[in-house]
Image (cartoon, rainbow, N blue to C red; front, side, top):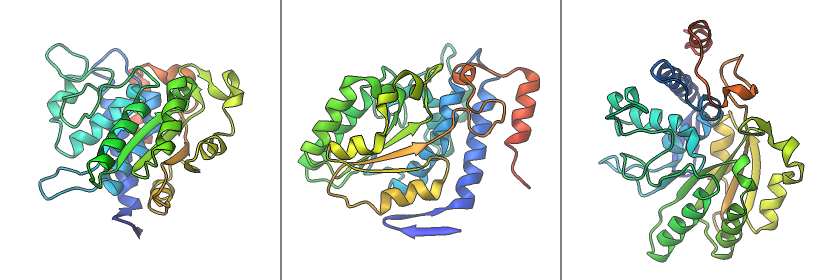
Length: 276
């Protein structure tokens, strides 16, 4: 199925195949290190895939006038897997994840290929994205800044300061996705911070265009962006599942930071195999 709208198109079947591939690649890396943030990476696979392969524009030389910033830096394995797929990161670097001599750590580092900002100190990414979007606007450029935020980091006051500033500056070139998997590390966000909800209405009250979508539905994510008004910042709240794609990981807190055993690894690979 091809969905056409706005600047680009999205092939839903191809997106599903890529996302399975990305989850397998992330799983492969768990065999090389003691542990990584697999649960939070899996919850935002479809979001990051849609940004890179359907929303961000690409010039003939591969560069993009648009910018991507992963505020939830602990989910970096999905960004690394995508950058590898695009040929921006060599496969050897993912195989050196968190090893001596490698360049990739547990959070994205600025100046590594394809990484626009160092993130991982949660609550700062949105403010950086606001600054980047304002710079694009001030320089008269049409670049769009895409940012992925976690629901847990929205406990930080800096997130709401940036939210207020973005609408006050009229940043229609800022598109933010919230990976709303209802976990902040090992505890349910809805349990620890029930007043955080309803999320969509809060961003609307701050002057944003705001919508909620199923966060593992690539078409829904895509259409929420290409149908936007464009004169205000956009928040797409994505309902996601921590550990999505592997049955025993889904909504299980311990998979925030853990590597599977050999038996668990084989089961996960079986569940993530292509249908063919």
